[in-house]
Image (cartoon, rainbow, N blue to C red; front, side, top):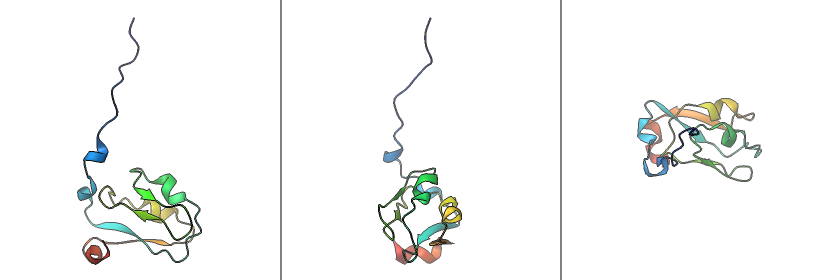
Length: 90
């Protein structure tokens, strides 16, 4: 009898999926961050990095703009902004 079918991990790191974003993306203000890492923990894409307060950033090459990070932030230090208005923030 055979066990469950398993496969090798996907290649998502090779496929920059940030272009799927349509309207908004997170902007990390890095002013009031307390370093709780909640944004990092809830991100479904795993595209947030940082270690200490006011150091967290998002890799927009993979961010889908879902806004979960902004919703969970207890200090409201992450805001969702229109995609067009952030071109200079890259």
